[in-house]
Image 1 (tube, one colour):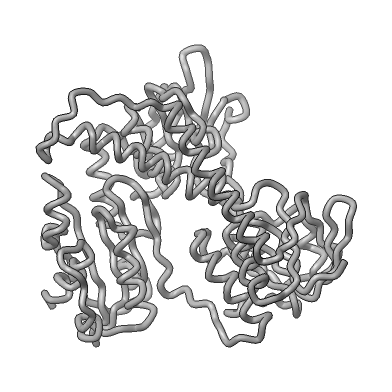
Image 2 (cartoon, helix red, strand yellow; image 1 turned 90 degrees about the vertical axis):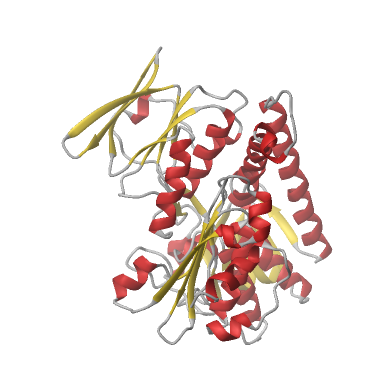
Length: 450
């Protein structure tokens, strides 16, 4: 059977593309080898945030006395937390399937294999298409560490299903995944050590605020070993021994559990990508235009496979652009305002340029940094806690970047992202009326100090 669009991968890029194309009246086949929603919905974004919300609720209950509420006893029922996480995932997967069915999208379960740009095989069937959209996502990187094959380590999959909290835990990698799991297990009572090769956690985020988040979790008992690499692993009845090196200093850490979270890489093998003869980047990602087109007409790549941004919200927008291009609509992908969020407690979010990225390019800028206490709503809801808001502007006062440490950074960062995408100046952004009292007012407070 022939379709106008065949999509490989049912994650955020794939299901968004399928829904958008289906709504437009195109005939669509979506091939997914596992579960609809991809890594993000089934073992990434959604389940981790569900667990982190339970941890945040637990933190709030334990510290409720600061707000005049006495909670005599608190207890984290971890099996129920995991059961709720599974329920949330099931509900959302079913929701995606219902939306795609309503848009007349044909869903084929199984592994796709590309024969050529117009022919794809799944199971024992072969399908033809006018346009091929590849959204194969990413996979966990497992580093080559001596002894790792003899250690029963966790990746995010095992950590998400843990019903018994370990007393001690080592997290290898201080990126987004590592920090979010470190935050969760710290709230649940684990003694957590984070090992990071770089000189600061959360590479790519604002370094100053990353250091402040690290200091906050340091106060809560999380240990951080920066500029440190893991050189050897072993396991016995006592637990897992992690040997790490920092300069000339070697250190051994014994832990009940070890979480590997050094990053993810795009899936490029096993589905016939090589049969398309695509032009590749130096890192072997398909070269795409700002319309998500590859070097082969009618072949599009979206999501993690592009290598631009391994984030679900980036993938969603890329998918919209790709389908709009197929439909003949004028649309292009912009990467100037892709928000990054770490859902710790407090949250940390940033969008646009950082001071580090501007310094690396030699660009001049102005930086405004104020405490979150400038927001009345923040003070009302964060007793004894502070955070920071940083806004970066050009010499001619165009908004370049914004970074927030403090709840709810994930929700208010969109305000800054819109300003950056629209290339608003300070005076233009200040004309927008923001409701009072809201934490989002912090951006107005920051800009008013210029």
